[in-house]
Length: 269
Length: 269
DNA sequence: CAGTGGTCTAGACCACACT
DNA sequence: GTGTGGTCTAGACCACTGC
Image 1 (cartoon, rainbow over the protein chains, first blue to last red):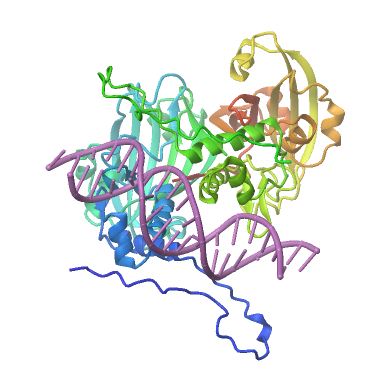
Image 2: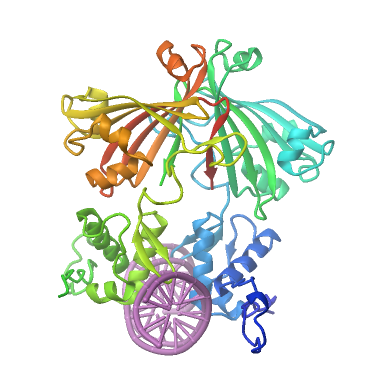
């Protein structure tokens, strides 16, 4: 039965049987990899390959220990790190699950915009308006960010998010065309909940990590109109690159945030 | 010799010897605290009390295990978490050290502003200009942030940071007056390196964690002049509250960042 | 109750830094 | 070599979930 998992190369270790000859510049590659790191990589591969999908319960620690032929403690340390990276979620008494953007009570995991006063949810759900969704060829800039070639097909989505009927976020997304075949304005409009949840269920793309670059900019005439502010109003420009499991960027997002009633919150440590 | 450390209350645990009488509403306080958490707290107390100062080598894991009467593994887990929070720094073969803002190769640990192109250091060290440093009484707003009473003494510092002679950051700081007695413009100007390093060495205040709130704002006439931009230029407003070990806010900082050649970088996961 | 993750221990051995 | 943190194991027991 065991689908097997190939026991890890027990040691990718260095300098063992090296005879006593000249050290030959003393082998500049230590390249030592702890067992639990190898296990972590194997689990990551299973996630990437879709063996366990977002929301799924993965095998118990003892099962994985048996599969990989290591002790439970070693599996535990691997899972600990994956959980710390928000790839897995542990639930005592129940098991370990693959993290997901859906059905996870935190609605927008990557959105750092908060109302100046009141809680995150006192806003209620955002009103979303899709302004556009079309397929086109990547500009040099977009291609570079998504590691495509200029001219490769991409999907561009534009939308506005409003809170209490005040348009607050105007954003454009670019997605690799090949991975998001079949993404239409209808799909987008019909889907409730976070967009990243849709990406998971419909396209098997799970966003795991992102980098953002923030600047303060003046509202262009077009942006001003869509956000209902005077042209020239200072806006927070947020450029986000989101990555999947394997570290490949799968989304470029450029947002303009109104910060008259909201702020971008960040924790430093 | 052993300065002692009082072994942890072996278990703050519930429901043990409780006889078979009525469960009495089944004690709604689970209040279970793992041993390693208790150890973590004890270490934290030693840090707070100044038993080990920033940069110091703390006792080895085996020593601490002996002191607290627990196994090395338990101490290890406690230290692991403190290291993850950047309170301690482990160095294989050498020992575990108290984290410090000084002599730590990352110059500005809390500054998220990066040049649009080039590395963090291609900028060279920032040119710092102290605009002011005076003692005054806390406004209601400042007092609330620092958990003081309005009217309590505070120290206010204003300064400008420039890169390549381009003034880029204009910021004001407010510090509790009692903890920063003796902070003068001369001290500030004379001290090289990060301001937080000065706070550690001169005032024994180590900043451990901070929260930032970002907004896009228009440059006032005064700010515009100091940052050498036209009035009304969009600037990134960064309000930071920095905390010490015990979670008490010790600094309020309001910064205005030029983002024409720099951006605020953030990692999401 | 059984099954899961969570804690704690004790001991062995490895990798690294210093002397 | 000695001492430090880092890895790995094996086993015992605890706490939580759900049957």
